[in-house]
Amino acid sequence: MKQSTILALIPFLAGVNSLTTHQKPARFDVMAVSDGPVQYRALATSATFFWLGKGDGWTDSHCPPNVEKAGRCPPGKDTILKDAHTLDTVVPGQVIYVDSNYAVRASGPNSTHIDSGSETGGFKYVPGNRYGQWEYQGDGFDGFLACPYNNGIYQVFVNSPDAKPRQGVKLDTCVPFTAGAFEYRLPANVTAAAWEY
Image 1: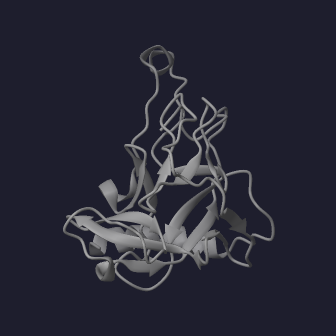
Image 2: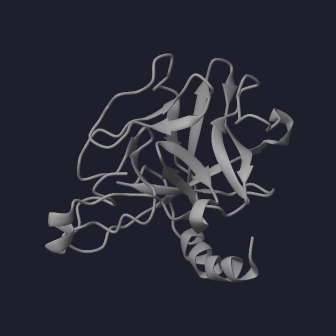
Image 3: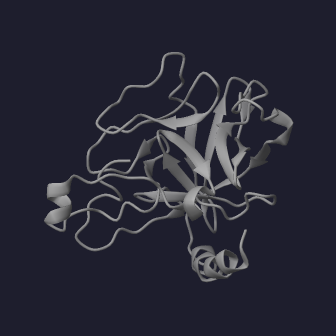
């Protein structure tokens, strides 16, 4: 991680750590908080997959041109969860799931379709003293894995011995991580973090 990125995160983390999170907030963003190569990287979604480190944590989102022209687009820069298994969008229904390769995914824009053989349960928000955690438990395994993709980008999987990273990436190069969940406050006059992802 670049020194400038670390310095930019310090005030954010100091403010986050002062919050008390004894219950699930209305919406939250996720950051890797465990030691290792993905520490302090924000969760981002792009092309229905989840990543750590993609574009310095900025997500890919879409807002219709007519809404953008009217100046009514939500920020759309961060991947925000409305609850443990749904993205926070104006257009409802983007569900988070685990595909048959154990990759963490989200249904596409304007769709609740998920791939066959996928699992939608197992995700949960767990409150904490300084911040909550986004967790996954299912089929005898729990937690998340970050698997190298390219250029310092890691793809997010659930922590299963059967996870299948992209071709050429060995499972033993993946690292488990804790997913810290931090309250996200919307700007005034906005109802969701993104129109759709």
